[in-house]
Image (cartoon, rainbow, N blue to C red; front, side, top):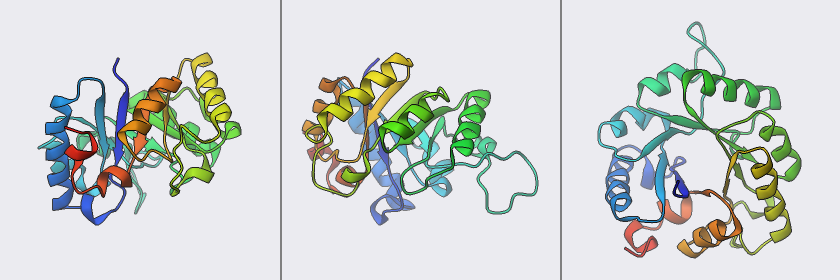
Length: 215
């Protein structure tokens, strides 16, 4: 299986509404040319349905809630993201952190609904915890690298290697995030033994995704 690159659209203007569709079309074309990687995208929930009609890459939600049908105003129903075309979801992103019990519930819901679970962890302690929930992927994002300019592959190498080893022992795929700024960072992450990366602003705000991938 090829390493996975998940592009988190967040709520950037460049990846919202009509811009989200435009970016998705570009990434879909890029995905056809990428020989060494698979692409996935995580747009805002409100954009999922429109994007699913025009999308040819793996579609994920940015978040959901551990609820079922009923009186849950303002919550995100897992069944609804699936119906909107999402094949999985991010869980416990650093900008939307969750208690351990909620992470566990959401991972179990994903398993039940056959949705891909991508659970974020910010240090080795949290990584060990979320690995015990057996998600499909964990995304290891050291807090000190979030929003910075240091590459995840050049900082705290021993911690990253330990994270990769922990995931392999639990037979869970691991992505590296926070500090992924270039194609070289992606290549470096894979060389370290990661199964891919979680990336956002470096690609979304690049203006020219083709140039980012050197296509």
